[in-house]
Amino acid sequence: MYASEASFLTFGHTTIANNVLGIGSSSGFGVDLRVGARAQFGAISGPNVISGNQLGGVSLQETAEISFWNGGSQTLIQNNGPVGVTAGFGSQVTFFDDVEVSGHSGPALDLYANSQGYIFGANYLHNNGTAGDPRSAAIRVDGNSEAFLRGGLVSQNIGPAILALVNSSVDFTGVSFSSNTGGVIACDSSAYMASDLVTGFNTAPGVSCRMPHSLGNRSINKL
Image (cartoon, rainbow, N blue to C red; front, top):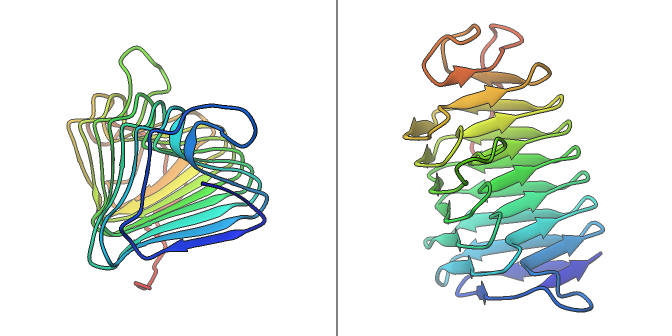
């Protein structure tokens, strides 16, 4: 599914699978959004599945936006080449309850070049990454990007659950982390976190990231 300056909406029972790189708009992603395109995958009438796509599940560029939200069923983003969802150049991704992302050789969610991720509720990111890749992580936040997490489970990924690089930041609370080979979070010297973890630097096993203040997480209301 390719969209440029357009909108797409489904209320469930949508499967996008096994697409490969080809000529024209066949980018090898299951969903390819560009130039301000908008998409919503609501799981009301049944589950949505994005799987087996050669270069990744979902790609967003140039201020595109996508939301996956639970209306009683689940969204599955599984076994899509090197990445589950990637967003760059001012794009934005929302996982709102019961989104499962697994089985990728790279990150479940890759944010770069001034992009944002909002991960709210009982989402499950697991079994992503590749041994020997120094940038392997479940969630990679790079190049002035932001990730905002409230709840969910991030487990059994290769590398840290969250890797923050190059002036990026992460705000998370209520998230469960387990069995990620690189621990909870790793940051370079320019990245920061605000979290419900103990304040300070290297304050808990698997935590290597600075906190810019002791004022806690940003308060939000459930939408």
